[in-house]
Amino acid sequence: MRQTFDIKGGPQDGRAHLPLLRKELSAMKLDGLYVPHDDEYQNEYLPDANERLAWVSGFTGSFGNAFIFTDRAVLFADGRYTIQAADQTDPDLFEIQGIPEPGAFGWLKMQDMTGKTIGYDPKLVSPNEVALLKQAADSAGANLVAVAENPIDRAWADRPDQPSAPVVAHAVEYAGMEHAEKRALIGQSLKADRADAAVITSPASIAWAFNIRGGDVSCTPLPLGRAILRADGSADLFIDEAKVSDDLRAHLGNGVTVRPLSQLETALGDLKGKTVSVDPDIASAWFFDTLEAAGATVLRQRDPVALPKACKNAAEIAGTTAAHARDGVALTRFLHWLDTEAQSGKVTEIDAVMQLEAFREELNALNDLSFPTISGAGPHGALPHYRVSTASNRVLERGSLFLVDSGGQYLDGTTDVTRTVPIGEASDDMRRHYTLVLKGHIALAAVRFPQGTTGTHLDVLARHALWQAGLDYQHGTGHGVGVYLGVHEGPHRIAKPWNAVPLAPGMIVSNEPGYYREGQYGIRIENLQYVTPPAPVSGGEIDMLGFECLTFAPLSRDLIVTGLLSGEERAWVDDYHARVRDLLSGKLDGDVKAWLKAACAPL
Image (cartoon, rainbow, N blue to C red; front, top):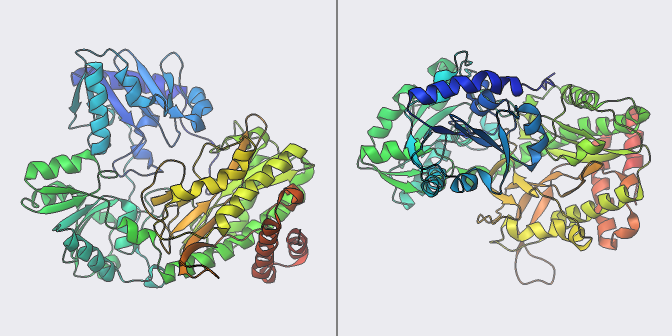
């Protein structure tokens, strides 16, 4: 199994480790420490060696932060993790506060910290975050200082080693472009911005720009490293040389100099007098401090790799299309299993995760999961980011809904798909809510839109039917997705908060509206889709962008209230199911093939 069900962490970690950290704080003459979840690379999934927040608190959620003082500890976690945070921390040691209101910095502003010194690790926070942290500290009367060595690292005696998985070349048949050509294009963009070089801090950007992949991070094939990319297209790649083979050096060629990570600070110092591009949203404050101290002119702008990486080329679209067709076979076999064997009322959430992973493994192409599978039965489905454990494992009971959100990492693409299915007979409310979510999904799948439109402009389409019924969901509607890279990537997204990046041809984005009735059930329908080039609309005056679906697997016909759909919406469902049937039926046989035909029958 690639997924484990014994979640690490718990109150015992805080009880054991908090005194050790406080001892270091006293030794460093600090009254407190800001502890983010992020590591040096701003990874979504962290190597064990970088799980600092989990080490000191016991909380293992993927988003959160804390202030640790010599006499007080406060953990901040958002609504996804309210229950988990309470379960995994000792209430005698940690106070639990919410995000985003007031959030860690809002909370600090309201405290009286007069005369206290609060430390932060400049390698773990962005300069934008440091500015907000300083405002909060000033309001509280505290003195904020950057620490040269993280007190947690000093206290963590049995800290695991940093990951050292080999770095491998990613074939141009999947990448669609030689890395020298990519670097030349990025160099041209730097020249246009009058920059001499860019410091690339995102492992995903490095993986894309150099056509390499690694295994340092679970669920994402990333090599941990840094790069300096110059306007002439040449580059220095800073990476643990134990990960680098002769084959990789040959792949990188003469235009790339491989250097150990220990030389990074010196190399930044060598940029004295140069204009250097760095992304203040993803690069840590340490890079800005080091470059400015060296006498470089820092140009604060978006990572120059982010947008080219987001706009997939023809080979990347072809690869991810093939990956989704392959993944659809496994998912359809799983949905058949849910509709037959799992209707017994004896199957558990963990059983479902294991069965789905087994179907994906049988494809003989799965390299990893793209994230830990969300397998939510009944009330667990109402927790959008629920992760099953041996302690929480629940039976798929008849008369309930089951929500499964999962994905795979394949050499040619990354998948992410959510389906909600009935176990036994669904209630009228379940069917109505499912249909309202489906109406939003269809609206976002079918929309045509002009160039310059952002995901924020489109978000209301997915919510309209729910809003008209007085309902909503508290998560984004769509996130970017990489190609054999991160299942969550920017710079684009579809959500209520403003996003200034227009949707552009080749961008992959999820379409995942939902509805969650606390304590009872959750509903989410998620497909991935990519932005198509501008094309004329019959009778129109402006060429419009649109979306092309990537994910193909049956929807739950038994949950659709046909009378709530318009004629156009019913036609969309029938057309989608016809495409699912045509794409997948030839790759299935026996009972599964027969089930697919019935599942995809016209409404």
